Length: 424
Image (cartoon, rainbow, N blue to C red; front, side, top):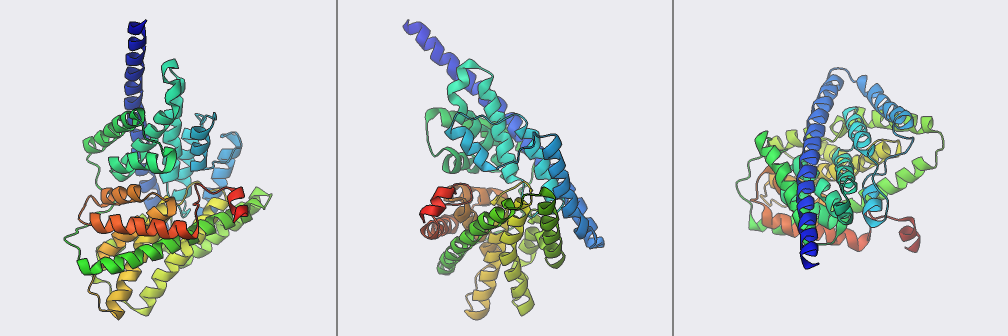
């Protein structure tokens, strides 16, 4: 009897290991594919808008319309709920349907490619979670490891997107499951190893190429101020998403949602083309010029406009039917918030701080505050710049931003529930 029990345990662990490796490979491959296809698609269409602004009047309408018809005729007429779908699966008996893989892949690609002001991160998370969910159903031995395999898929997807295995594991822990176990460590550890190996084999470069040489201790007070401001901005982002999505949900006719959403996107993009798609193109441009940029009133107004309008246009994208979440918008807002803070204190307080560093720290601060996951934000940003020079200020500011955000608003867009709002 003991031998049978021992053999059963060994077989179960072997099955979990094999499944985790396969999930890691499939999730990593899907994530890398979606990233490259979206980058190419978005860059090509955005280049068209630079040549002829009229494209900005039609691209959002095309994107939102195509997503609607795909959802209506191909994806069972069901809207994608983003990461809440993953929560429903891990916290109850619900399963993520297999069609969620192509649904989020295609809709995320179209949303960002045609100018929807969000990112593919949430599409990646849900589609890779669905891969893990399918794996647990295929073998009787794996039925009790549903959450572990879902987390394995998510961790591999985040790893492939941001070149950071630790960010992948920590996101699965801090945001999705909040439970640590031996099976979780094994499943996520093996899956991110496979996903990261794919990145190395393909010589994938970091998302942002920067040269960080040092940071100054005298900048710490200003970093902390940046963390507090990021925390406040994250609440603004959360409230924008919840309020504007609620306004759109009150509109019954989908055609009205699409027309209002597309027109709003077009108008804002005509004024601020930096907000097109995930906005990573604008971040890259400003990372290159951050340390030489001079403070002027037009520059300040431009940065302020970007920071104020990004949450609104993101919320409109999601409310009108686009796929995405607050992941990429948080990184985007944080970068420009950091740049604005650095320019202000250098100009008026003669602080002599490094604006590039503040852009990078701002990304992590805003992400940490928006998703309430400081360690994920820390290692993710270190991964996207492939540099750990700013590790200590990143660590401090990520926690400052999260604490500030939670003191004002205990929930985020992932954890919000109607009863929570009514109780406040």
